[in-house]
Image (cartoon, rainbow, N blue to C red; front, side, top):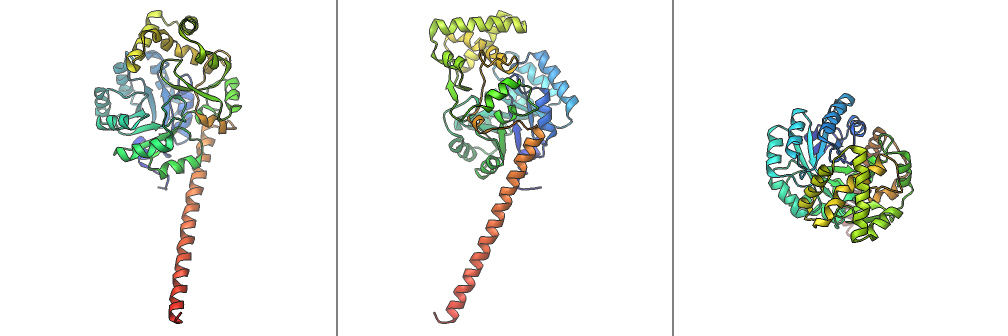
Length: 374
């Protein structure tokens, strides 16, 4: 037991309060298992997987690690209930959600002993899922990658910590031991990272994409709703600049072309793609014209994260990409974060002892002065 042993260590059954976020086409069995074996909580990203692919990914992850891991689900997916049952039958430890899950999904998972951890970007959402019975939650500030809000982590985090009585995991802007200590000081039970885990040697992302991330500065990101109608933070590229500037028919035409390419690659039918878009429309109250664009989002992500095309795809990222300079393994990364955090905490303890000694010396000097009549 150390100062880094927080409530989520016991809740998840992990050594360290460090969570690897579920990232579409990135967080597969290899990255998830590598994180789990290093003492953190790895999370499979299922939003870009079919039901069969998710079932296979869960089984593959089990062959790579005996440590607990989680699966990220989309609460608005048409087969969300079936996926919940898959997690239960597969004895997955944690179910995380990118959107607030329906109360009945939370109840079913908790009855089966699965830990439920939604991600939120606002205090009111945190209060809602906590009231519904979530075991813990991830709160992501505006610095984070992918779908994100407008409030900075340093403002949002203490708001949520004070509002709920369950463990809060901080996300958005974390990449080292200093951030872990800061999050703990704010009252969080740990940190969750996406971009930092994407940029590891265990990540399956093509080298060309990783190099593009490593070359980015903290100013090389853009937040746009042009992809699926919901604000997302992406790496700024000529393609994303064009995407954000396109309007109406031009954006729809580009989406139709990308959707056709995605359908050829994956064998997905137009009906399945439209169902996906309609689900996102209902979840995010999108206009009808945004349906095809929303359904097309996985295609643009896959082109980059699987095919390595920096010119055609989109790359979700946190601003923290501008501070990352290397590609360690997950084991090296977590070891580094833990060592730095423990060193900082030890330094704080030493400073406290020194300050206590100084105050005791000052008190003795005052007493001696009083004895001299001065």
